[in-house]
Length: 130
Image 1 (cartoon, rainbow, N blue to C red):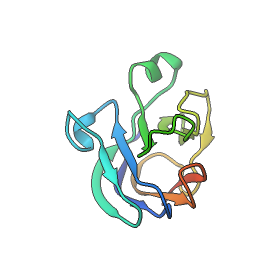
Image 2 (image 1 turned 120 degrees about the vertical axis):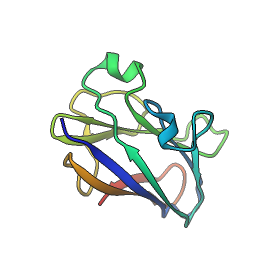
Image 3 (image 1 turned 45 degrees about the vertical axis):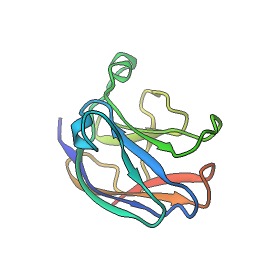
Image 4 (image 1 turned 90 degrees about the horizontal axis):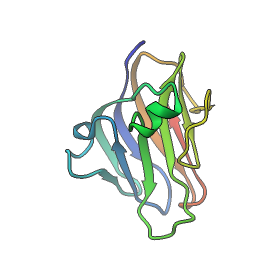
């Protein structure tokens, strides 16, 4: 199992700020008590290892990174990232999906990546690894 690390996060979503938190290793984000907040247009360096998650049990035990919009609207999507097999995968509904959708861009495991948050609103949001 290889290590894939997010080394920076760029928020190119034109209207939304996002909280990012590594639930497996909270200290990889903003410390044990809080998530990292990334405003529109902001670029933040970091060192966040993407957790391995091979089952629903791993998912329930916080082997994932979450990207949550800064809003009180419960209908806004929560994106979730994990490594499974040879790829980095994600969901837009905050749930685990066995062999989930590959993150657009460079979804292979091993190495350093940058994460880009894209879209035109908190409802039209996606991510890319490069």
